[in-house]
Amino acid sequence: MKEHAKQKILVVDDDISIGQALKSGLGKHGFTVRYEAHSTDAITACLDFHPDLILLDLDMPIKDGGQVASELQSQPTLQHIPVIFLTSLVSQEESAKRNASGEILLAKPISIADLAARIMTVLQPAPAPRGNGP
Amino acid sequence: MQLSEPNIEQKVPDILIVDDTLANLQLLAGMLKDRGYRVRPVPSGKLALQAIQKEPPELILLDINMPEMNGYEVCALLKADEALREIPVLFISALDETIDKVKAFAAGGVDYITKPFQLEEVEARVKTHLKLRRLQLELERQNRQLRESYEKLKKLEDLRDDLTHMVVHDMRSPLMGITAQLENLEMDAEKTFSPDDQESLRNARSSGVVLVGMVTSLLDISRLEQCQMPLDVTCLDMDVLILDALKSLGTLTKQVSLLYHKKNVPVMVTCDANLITRVIANLVGNAIKFAPEGSKVAISVEKEGDGSKFCVADTGNGIPLEYHEKIFEKFGQVETRQHRKLYSTGLGLTFCKLAVEANGGKIGVESEVGRGSTFWFTLPLVKDHAENPK
Image 1 (spheres, each protein chain N blue to C red):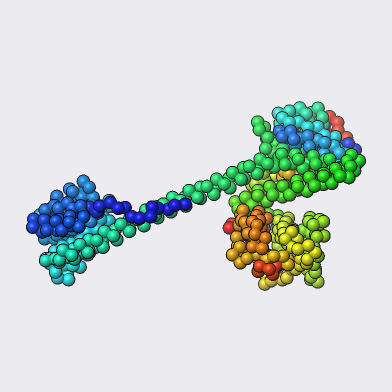
Image 2 (cartoon, chains in turn orange, purple; image 1 turned 90 degrees about the vertical axis):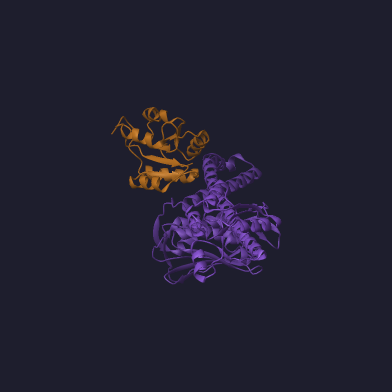
């Protein structure tokens, strides 16, 4: 099993089958994973869990991934955490918009191995230990 | 779809006769009634117009010289009315100068019968014009039906595409649920499962990969058709794309004797590398699938004009000429004469066509039954990508 200094990933997706799959899958790739099914719990989870990276499903009801990301930006202790968006549908407009702002948007389905590799690319070099803010 | 009933209406024709001379009216009316027509005789233009407004006839026999309102005036009024202008008007008149006839035709009449007339002549002309008029109406009716059918079909096609898109879109998450978990199981397979179970797991994973491929194809096709596909265009050597494609096919390439001779000089293309790699993998994968075991599949790249041409040739059954375009269509099916079974070409080739065209190229096949097939596509050197892949 790969050693990633047990980096912490928060997964937010309303689809439980995806959430569970990512939790066990990324776990096997050496990450510590917390899964939240409700986007409304995302911010609280971040404040509690202090993830190194957040995987956000874009197509969630009530509050979608984009809105969660905006909320994260407004929190000084959370705004530096990298975000990867997952979506079932990539439109040219959405893709262009995200790429322009340097955000990462990945299309489902994606293999766990590919996802883990992508996460690793984003997290290297290993970020500073988590504390209560920069 | 049935377009129309086999024949024109069998309704009894209704003829209006207009003549201020009662004797003429009686003569004509009598003759036509005997022949089975329904006749309405009227002695003036004014009464004729009233009768026509009340119930439009199928044909009008119109005298020219009448007091108060002559035949030309009656005709002009009819032709000015959109609802009545198509009713055939046959003039009957004692005036037999050419100038009178020309004037009658110019007024909108379709025929001119001179008095004194032969009853047989009148009947023959009436019959002809009635037939003409009925044929015209039938034609218009069929056109209307065709137009409606077309609109309906178009709507159904759009619905089908929307539905497919929606269903397939909803499949993506649960599909990922399955494939991701299978992937998870495979990670510890050697420790956890017996060799048989490991084999089962591999098969399950393979099927998963195929399903994901189908779903992705369908959605990509949808996006390409709607010009919603983001293109990441770079300039690179075809060789790189080919090698990536072969790598993605994995052990599939071992089933046949795969020949690929890399060119000494790089063949550069400008395209979306990911899309074209998938096109190559698709075409080569097909060639391998349909080639007899152990046979040769040859891949080649040539410079063509300002761009390049990629070919993959197999020695399989070949494709009949009538299917050469059909196989690139969505959901197209081809019947193989030799095995007499219908195999679905699915969406792989449709995706290839759209992807190649979105990159400014063309795609096609050269094939003969019993002599194998060569699938090819071209790409321009400089990007000249169509705004609209269609």
